Length: 182
Image (cartoon, rainbow, N blue to C red; front, side):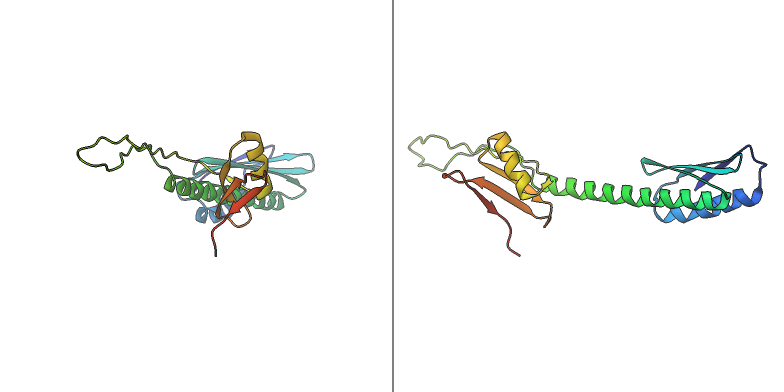
């Protein structure tokens, strides 16, 4: 990790610089590409402030902490940053897997003709297949979404079971739910 340490209102110290760089090296296991870290260490009267910014893998995380000891300020700021990096990584994985799943269910419009006798012309039967994007939600949200859109059915990912479900409107106004059997 490429690290730059800046001291404000504080004499530059190689031990503080080495401490911050050593602690930042623990984030190498979370990032795949080279990362940049900017550390600003400041002393204001009796407060020791550590501002740490890390940019890696398309996201930027910031940590700011004020304490009476510079080493503890660095540690606490890095703990905040670690939580943010883990959260961003999980969010990225979730989005990537959801995008992959939605691509599996995309179809293109297809026109087919029904096979008829060679001598007779039969009217062509057109079949249209639409692509449907679905998002995670619970069953109550799906019912509300159907009421808003006035559709007869809705395909969605159940946020509790993480499976694809289909909610449809019955003739009597109630709703039916199709879910995969386990």
